[in-house]
Length: 427
Image 1: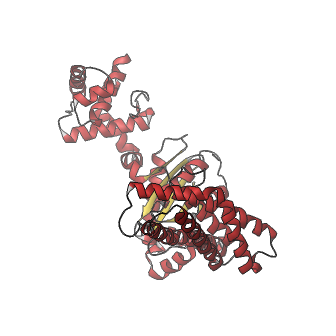
Image 2 (image 1 turned 120 degrees about the horizontal axis):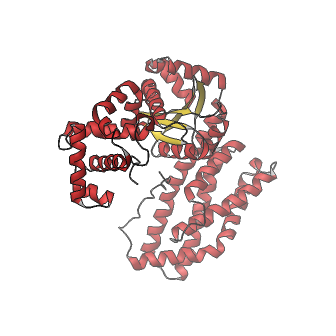
Image 3 (image 1 turned 90 degrees about the vertical axis):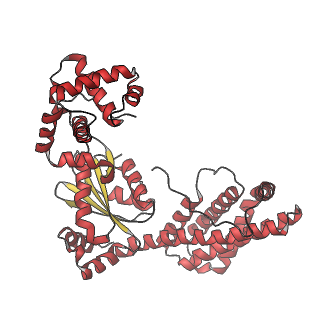
C-alpha cells in the first residue's frame, strides 16, 4: 500500500464586535499576543494543574494521561498564541490539534464535558493573560473587548470541531460490529436504501446524520486483494469514519461526508492505496446508494489499468462513458479519427497532437498555436488536413464533440491505435 484538494480548510472564526480594527490596533494586539509566547508553557501548565485538581479521577489512576494532558495543553496554548499573533504555525495546525484531542479523549473514555471544560479553562487563561499584557501596554479597552469577543467566540468553533471528532471516534468504537455492518451493506447493495425503515436503521448504524452525504468508493487493486484495515485506520486518523467490504472483484467503501470531507477522503486514499479508486457522492443519502456505487465503479474502471489513482466520477464523466461501452468507443474511433491513424511517421503524431489542442480550445487556431508553440497559420493548415482526412469539421459543434471524445478514447486506451505521447493531456 502506498486519500480529499488539496488542503483541509481551517474553520472560520467569527469577526469581533464594533467593526474591524485599524491596522495600528491589529498590530498592537498581535504584539500583545506575541509577548505571551515566552509564557505559553507556564500558562499551559497552570491550566493542567487546575484540570487535574478538578477532574482528578479521570487522570489519577493513569499517569500517562496526565503527562499527555500536559503536553497537549502546551501544544494547544502555543498554537493558539501563534495563530492570534499572526505568526506562521510551527508545524501543527490548530484544527488538527482539536480533532486529535477529541479522538484521543474518546479512546481514553474521558467524558466530553471534561474535555470541553479544559478548553474553557484555556480560553479563560489566555484572556486573563492578554488583559494583563494589554493593561501594561495601555491598549485601549475597546481593542481588548474586541479581542475578548474573538477569543470566546472562537471557543465555540473549537468545541464544534472537538465534539465532531469525539463523536466520530465513539461511533467507530461503539458501533463497529463487523457482522452487522456487513448485513447492512449487503442490504444496500440489494437496493434497500430506498426503504424508509431500513434506511433509518442503517443510517444510525453507519453514523449518518441528516446533513451528511454518502460517499461510495470502488477500489480496484491491480495486485492480489489487500486488507482494508490500513485504509480504515488512516481515515480514522484524519477524523473520518469509513466502512469496507469485499464485493466481487473490487473493495467497496462507504463514508459519511460533510463539507470538505470528500476531498479529505480522496487525499487519504491517494496516499494510502495502490490501484484504481473511483468515488461518487449520493446527495440523496442511502436512497441513492446504488447509483453512487455504480458511478464510483465506473470512475474506477475508467482509470487506465496499472495506474495508482483516485478520481471522482464528476472528474471522469467522458472517460467513464467511453469505458462503459468498448464496442461503441471502437466505433467512435473508426468513424472519426481512424484515417489519421493510417498516416505514417511523424505526420500522424503531429496531426493528432494538433487535433487535441484544437478541440481543447474550441477550434481556435490562435490558442491552439500557443499550446503547440507554432505559428497560427501552421495550425490552420494542419486542421484543414485533419478535416480533409476525417470528413469532420471543427467548426461544427457535433463533429468537434465527436473528435474530442475520440481523442480522449485514444489517450485512455492506446490499444485503439493512438500514440500516447501525442495525446497526453496538457499540463
